[in-house]
Length: 560
Image (cartoon, helix red, strand yellow):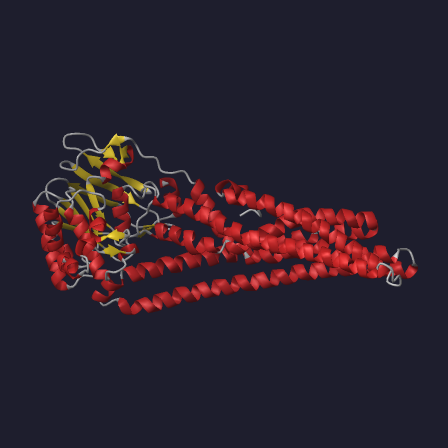
C-alpha cells in the first residue's frame, strides 16, 4: 500500500475529514515548536538577565501546555477517526461479500474475506492512529522547520538537508526487506483462521469417521508457522528501527559538533546556536517516527490494500433473463474447475454431471475435505464463477442457458439451500423458519415433525414464538440443524441443495430426516446431497466422488 493511498480517501469519507483536521493540527504544532525553541533559546542565552525571567517562564509554560493540548487532541481525533474509517471499510467489504455476485459460501475465499473484514482490518488501527498523522506531520513540519533553521544558520540547514534524505532512503530499503515478511504473516493468519474454522465446522463429521485425532496436530502446525512468520516480521521491524535511529542520531551529532566549534570560535551568537540545537531533533524526529510507526502498522496497511483491491474488483455481471421453471429440463455442470488460493490447485477439478429436474432425482456428492464439494454447490448457486467450464440450465426442448445470463433472483426463488455453516437471523422461531414466506401451520407442523424439530418447539418456553438470538442463540447445535432442515422442508421449492444435511444429528434423527427427504423426492423435488456419511448418500440415486487437482499456473491463467 502507498504511504497514504488516495483510494483509502475515496472509499472512506471519514478519512478525508481526518486528513484535513490532522493537517491543521500539525501546522499548529509546528508553529508552537518554533515558538518554544525560540523562547527557550532566548531565555538561556540571556540567563544572567534577571528581569523578565518569571514572565518568560510562564510564557514558555503556556506554549508547552498548548502544544501538549494539540497533541492530545490529535491523538483523540485519531482514535475516533480510525474507528470510523475501519467501520466504513468493513461495511463496504461485508456488503460486497454479501452481494449476490460476490458471496462464496463456505469456500476458502469467503472465509479469507470474512477474516480480512474482521481481524485484518482491526490491524489498521495503528496505521490510522499513528502512522498517518505522523506522515502528515512530517510533510508539514520538516520543510517548515528546515526553513526556520536556514534563516538562523544556513550552514546547519545545509548539513540537515544533506543528511535528511538518508532516512527515507533507508526506510525504502528496509521497507522492501520487511514487506515480504509482513505479507507472509497476514497470509499465514488468514490460512490459520480458515483452516481452524473448517476443522471446527466439520469436527462432528471427523469424529464420526474416527479422524478427529489428527486435527490438533494440524492446528498446532499452522499456529507454529504463524508464530514463526510473526517473529520474523518483528525481528526485521526492530532491526529497521535501530538503523533509522542510528542515522538520525549521527546526523544530529554532526550538526551539534559544527555548532559547538563555531561557538568556541565566537563565529555564532549563543542564542542562535541554542535555537538551532533545540530545533535539530525536531527536524529529524518526524522522519524517525514515520519509520518506526510504518513497520508497526505494516500488517494493517497490507490488510487495507487487500480490502481496497476487493472493493474495486469488478463484480461479476449477471443477466436479466428470468430463470425458467425448475419443474422440467436439466441442470448441467460442464467441466467445472474452480481455482483455490493455493497456486495451481483447483477444487473441484473437471466436475461434470447432468441433474434432471422435476423427476425426483437425488444426486450425492462425496469427497475428502478440500475437494471442493461446497464450492461446487456455490457454483450451482451462481455465487462462485468457475475458473473453467460453466453451469447451465436447459429447459425441456430448448437450448442450454448459461447461469450467468439469468436473473439469479428468479432462480433462487425456486430452490432451497442448506449451507454447511448455518446463519440464523435473530427473531422468533417461526420467523427464522418462514423467512418472510407465508407457510400454513399444517405445512410448518409437518416439516417440524419430519425433522424432529417439533419436540424442540414443545420444550421452548413460548413455542414457535420463542425469541432466538444471533445465529440461533438459545438452541444447541443439533437443534439449530433441525431448525434449518425444517426451514428447507417447509417450503415448496423444486430444487434442494443440501450441504451436510445430517451433520450434528444422532442416528435416530438422521434416519427420520432421510425418510423425509425421500418422501420429498417422490413428490418430484430434485435433491443434491453433499455429505461424508455413507447412510446419507445411500438414499441417492447416484453418488459422485469429487477430486481436487493441481494444475500448472499457465493453464489456470489461460482459463481465467
